[in-house]
Image (cartoon, rainbow, N blue to C red; front, top):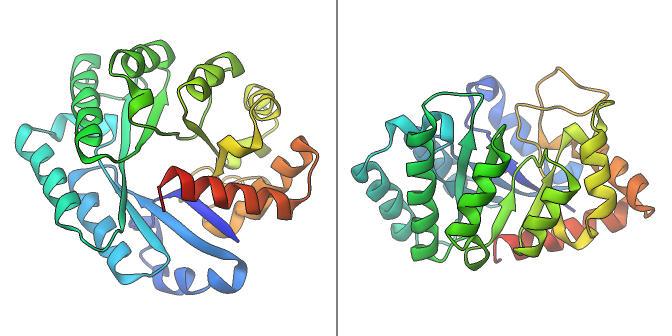
Amino acid sequence: MIFDTHAHYDDEAFDEDREQLLASFKENGIDAVTNVAASLSSCKTTLELARNHDFMYAALGVHPSESAELSDEGLKDIETWCTERQDGKVRAIGEIGLDYWEEPDKGIQKKWFVAQLDLARRLKLPVIIHSRDAAKDTLDIMKAEHGSDIGGVIHCFSYTKEMAREYLDMGFFLGIGGVLTFKNARKLVETVEYAPLDRLVLETDCPYLSPVPNRGKRNSSLNLTYVADQLAALKGVDRETVEKMTWDNARKLYRL
């Protein structure tokens, strides 16, 4: 059993074969997926996907690169979408955070990161944190906002094992995906070797970040076996152990 904790199946990259692909998951050992929003519009398409597929959950939030679109009204919309869902499908606020590769400016990103952390706290939902080229500011905000009281996952973890220790000490999980199979993934390999297996979850970030041997192609949850194999090799266990533990971890993360 594999739980893909971070996917974007509402992305246009899946428009031609989305339903056919999703229908193939069960026979290939993919038993649960969390589709993660990145904008206000994708909050709506994420909810639709979760409503139409029993195995799929939803995370609602606005990615830092899209945060200029947020307003108090938009934040209220996210809160309404979360609280009106009575079927248990909305499991997190995300993905939220900081991305200094992207616009808008840092002040706007920080403002809406903090606002969405506060929303998660009020709704008692975990958060999915995106952080790129913003290690110190992300950690500083997480500490100032008492992120340990919220909980969640650091998506596509890409920093040092020392930074990983900070988040593990806060009770967070680390999201591990296709980058683990890349030749230049030394920092991530060191982090995975250091971190306890019971604090790691599998993710794709599809359609992005396909693992070797499919690097550069459209990613999907079907590729998580390659990540699981690499994770198993680094931790000195078999793939079945990795799948079982990361499945259990994902259920703890999303409080299922």
